[in-house]
Image (spheres, rainbow, N blue to C red):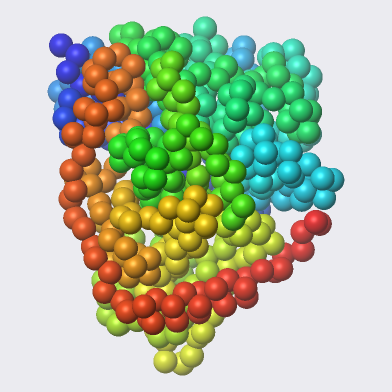
Length: 504
């Protein structure tokens, strides 16, 4: 009896497989981390074979630990770290280079050259994105220029490109033996290569990056009964793969933000705030991205404004791994709670430049306002405040672009377990913050997309009925506190700019 839906969540630091029932409740999960490869400053890579091995293991272990079999799954959805770029040999399935991760900044000269040569407006209009190191197009150009023989192989169709969703789906459905080479509209909208209006690869954009069309996957809706094939890997019975979404779009679906004006903020390695703008393409004048939120079957695509923040939860990891002032991420809340405020300290974690709404690859991290008075506790609190101030930067830009003020912020992701951080977010924004019962909405959104495609759920209304609030935080700061605190943050941001020389 196919009573469950599975979801692969291939993230930046780990891969998990989650199983959900008809009520959207978690039935089981397994999760494994993978190596973060840092060849030099600003470079971040993953091993695609390790990601695929981890994917197989988490699927098998999650099923075994719950006493289920693949045949109990009506369908599988896949969600992923979006812009991370993988190239591999179609004939052997071997990667031709490590994956270049979305955080990687080696393409800063490519991005700045596009802007300098007058192509920035074309990319913004067609793709909804600014030329930036974040997106896949520049990473793919770098690979084509730096991996021997790749361009020739790509032009023949022997070398394939994909973001991690494409890599996982290709391997799940047979790999070199007939695997489906496809992506969905949400992931394709993060490449700088897809036209938002046509939902297809754009010849002008491909020419700007020198990308052969033959290496690109087919672009499909986010939810589709047949477009992504069925599983054939490692002896799995043929389970249909019917949902594919980039992680932040998946969280938008998991948070049931199906109406224009509804917004969610996901707190993970970075932060990603999305505002549903309906079937209208809203092009940002305030440093936000225009992206596809989802497309369900044959329905029209739904668009969103997005504010992408590079470093939030990973700033806490930095306190743990590089500074050693905490031994586990969960300790930061206890440490930060030892003080009533940050003691005048601001931490801007611009480790790989600043993303939305600034888009400054020349920025680098800074801790400012230090005096002898300050302690590790002040730094811990400043780290949590940095997560929240960056989200305010984005929320303000969204209001400016859309004319819609966020009334309640729906939140999800691992950092939302930090209750002090969520209270600070409410205080800094001045609006209530609401966390659902199921905080891991990324995997849930992929499951929802997969389930809608096969009739496991009948409609988005049915999904809305599953959503339930777990906890709500109300603002406690005065308007003066909020104004003074944010003014200090903007001053600190200014100190991070022009740190790295980038040829503009």
